[in-house]
Amino acid sequence: GRISVPSGVSGRRPFNVPPRKAPAASFAELDAARLAHGLRGLMRHAQDTCRLRVVSPSVQLVEYSNEKGRRMAVHGVHTCKSPLCPLCAPKWQRTRSDEISQAIDKHGADRVFFATLTMRHNKRMHLALMHRLLTSAYGNLWGGKAGQAASAMLGGKPESIRAHDRTWSDAHGWHPHVHSLLFVGDSDLDAGELAKMLDKRWPKLLVGALNRFRRLCERI
Image (cartoon, rainbow, N blue to C red):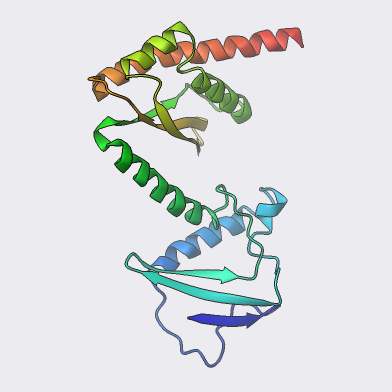
């Protein structure tokens, strides 16, 4: 049901709504809220003010329920809709998850491969540069004669769904990597053979991307 909360009122439960045990999903939402609070001031303005600015005359707390469980949502406040926002990311994940499942079912799960591509890194390396190197290398994965030969092994240039991920550790700093689903054509190539091909080709692509950046820096 809907619980209307007048603008300017904090999230206190209205007196006429009996308290009850919070749904299990709300604990994940609380964790996301704590993370978002800790990131305030570190993100862009739209993300920093997500769920903080009122954009309608009233604010509503709405509970949704289905066979997968229950979740809470706040209506009438600004949402940044960014996949990087801890509060908005779950909606993106639900939507993208459904789309990816449909794509795999339509293509055939036996012809979809999952690959993770990364690079060596240390704490002295800048995240922006590493991200550009990974993006450039991935963009050339099926380019040139070597790329065309690789795509031929897969029954033609494969369609793909990719996501850029970045993790951090005190020992090694930023660790950027690319997760990719490869939708291959009619090919007898198995996962082991694909891994060997990528292990051989991916380092060359990274070196090529680095050399292009070096030449660009020399011209500048």
